[in-house]
Length: 217
Image (cartoon, rainbow, N blue to C red; front, side, top):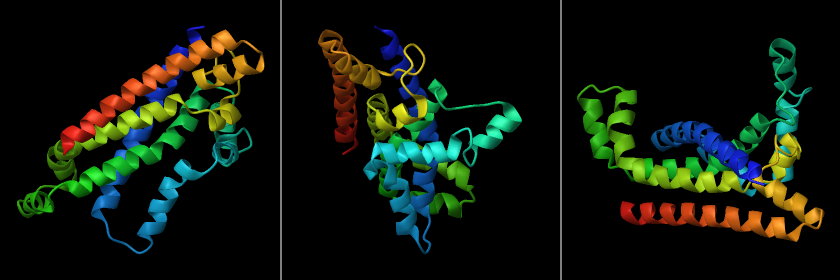
């Protein structure tokens, strides 16, 4: 019964790390650039937050499925098949949690006083040095809160994960899928226990994220 919990924690942690790296980089880039179509790019990056999970799952199948745009080459060249694997679940969870990290990181970077960044550039600091030594330390609380929210979102991911990873007990069955499976099979006791577990974990994460956001202000 604990296997779905450990699998969910592993998937959520790896998804948060992957989405965090991409989301923080995108948040920094979008906060520092002015270009035509910026609003469109922002809307595209936020799409996973509003699209139905089944649509995201279909996009992933088209992209990384065995016959997908990238999936066919992964299979042909490296023998990698991400469908019905926990790695596929990580990719699905990363996609749905990315907007939370990106939005939090962008807002945190935009809150950084531009005079500090301008002064660093005037003194000859490179962009990476400015990012690592000035922007990140000043924006870290907002980014950390975004990472926590993304972790909670990744733990609760269901639709896209089910389409990509399936429902294989012990291999790809995360907590949310295990709850669905328990309800479908009439095992109300197991469904209730799993529901309480994921609810407690998510509440703890959300409370911690809320405290970080309050401390930021």
